[in-house]
Length: 410
Ligand code: TTP
Picture 1 (cartoon, protein in one colour):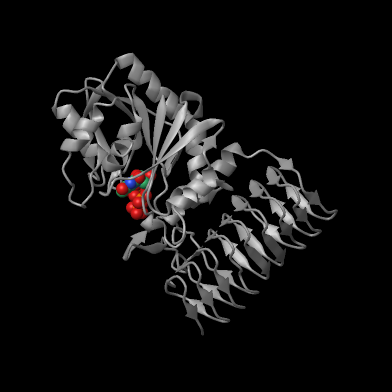
Picture 2 (cartoon, helix red, strand yellow):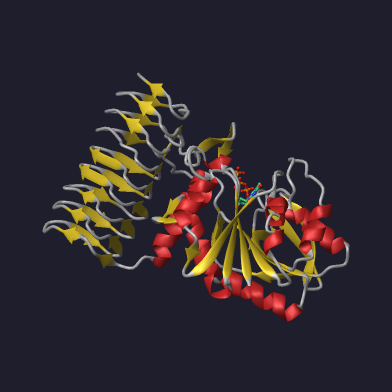
């Protein structure tokens, strides 16, 4: 069976982390999001078809031409936007057989794929999808069911509970004919959920598998923190490959990659994952649910908690990084501090595509892009973003978002 993975989106809600790269290759717990998806599909498929468009070279460069020995074919998405058009782009690569189609920006457990395949085979339906119960479907697609099959999918039905569509499907090649008949939606895209509704109104059977494990749609920056926390909490094994100096304290589970040195006085409370060739300490404090990539430097008098620090980035002296995301090749100047809590204890709002969105989190720090440099004593307010390539001068108080590639001085 083949798997079509949708990885052509622009990932605009994840700016600045997607300023210079597509969302599926962003690393969570030090691994690209899309690799977790391919791993879950791996036992069930013999070929991957990845639909690409936005900065496609970076996906190709990251994954190469095979995954676990199985070929990857990259297909450019047709001109129009939307998940239906993304799937349609694979038409020439699908023969007689049914195939998986899956969003390239979700995190879930393999049980979802296993259950879906089982239901599809058992019911001999024309298509099948994975659903999960949620109390609030306002950001999701609601799957209404009847007699053991899907009756309708309603996008963003408001704050009601029910079964959500998780973006994991099996189709047979008939779906292409229905995509051809799918109309453009209100937001100007061709949506696979509209295609599924068309199939149902034409008398086709769409089965569903109800999954109850963890699932996250990585759309907004704090979703990355949620998935990072889940992975570290449930998958991390204590594994020290680097060197730990006498006088450092490590409370398991902590993973430390080859070539990394943890100097005396460092205090690390797991779950924490640290990549290869990092310099950690002396005298730093790394708290739970922190992922630090390869070639990073976390120096003296630095505290990090519940954060993602991507490859080649440094918090070298006197930094506090809490509930934050720091992109690749970024350097925080001495004394750069992220604030992660409002004094009035309200949840933190973040500007997403020009609109303030409530993250629902009481604690959320900074979202810092790639290739950023901050000067000494930079203070960053909760939920603020610094665009990739920005230079933030000494003493700047970041109380507004900073666009990419600008110089900001105090
Ligand atoms: P979305 O999350 O709706 O879109 P996006 O990834 O571009 O993010 P944003 O809204 O922040 O810009 O997409 C769901 C999945 O479908 C995701 O895996 C990307 C994929 N997709 C395509 O492959 N092609 C497309 O034209 C669109 C819209 C999405």
